[in-house]
Amino acid sequence: MQIVVDLNRCQGYAQCVFLAPQVFELHGEEALMFRPRVPDDQHERVRRAAAACPVQAILVGEPAGLGAS
Image (tube, rainbow, N blue to C red; front, side, top):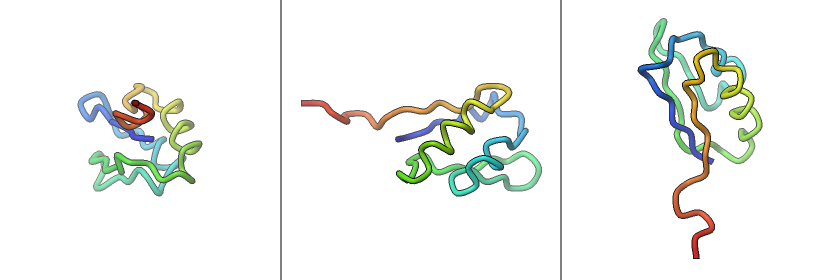
């Protein structure tokens, strides 16, 4: 699983930080840092974090080429 965060849309509500602290981290008051490649044990937490984002700034997907023949 990979994630992309639209940092222009992100408003620093930090719901993602509370729900998936191993993937999302707030630096200062509004600077969001995140791990683009999500560890296997964090998938469900990241899905919940994406759903909880008030501005829907988190996009969740599979890495490109996965399952391609």
